[in-house]
Image (tube, rainbow, N blue to C red; front, top):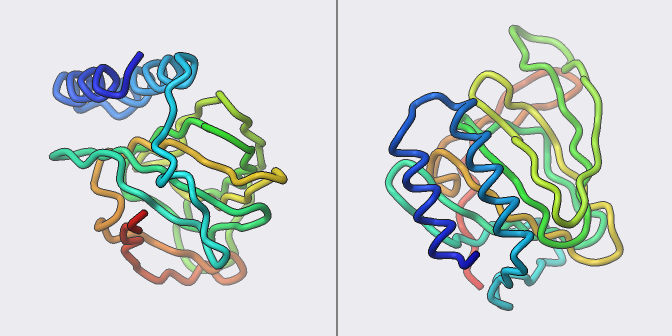
Length: 178
């Protein structure tokens, strides 16, 4: 499968339904097929930053986007949400996802568990009702994920959580340039 076929398939899926569970299931199937096809990301979208993970835009569309997220070994995200649905496929490396219960009031966050995803694996990272996690790069090489979101993830206002207190700070992640 080539990238254009994948993008056309996602556009059709998003246009056909408003059901996040249906969308994420179908997008996950297509993302898995893209990863299995041997698709190669442009080299400039695979470079990590020594300071923090980076979000490169691969495709921006009305109502959804595809991002390439790159972490240097050992980097981690703060605990955060997305405010939309999302599907992640691991292109290289491995990531450990730590999930938290979505808070209903003040107080420490409740950890629900963790899982490690490796090259070629695909997961639904979020829906609007299940959307609090942190990610840690778990390999000796850069961890690279292809992320499909139901909004422009570089500009959407999202929550960052203090896991000890549940305090919320709003942020927009922004996009990085290769």
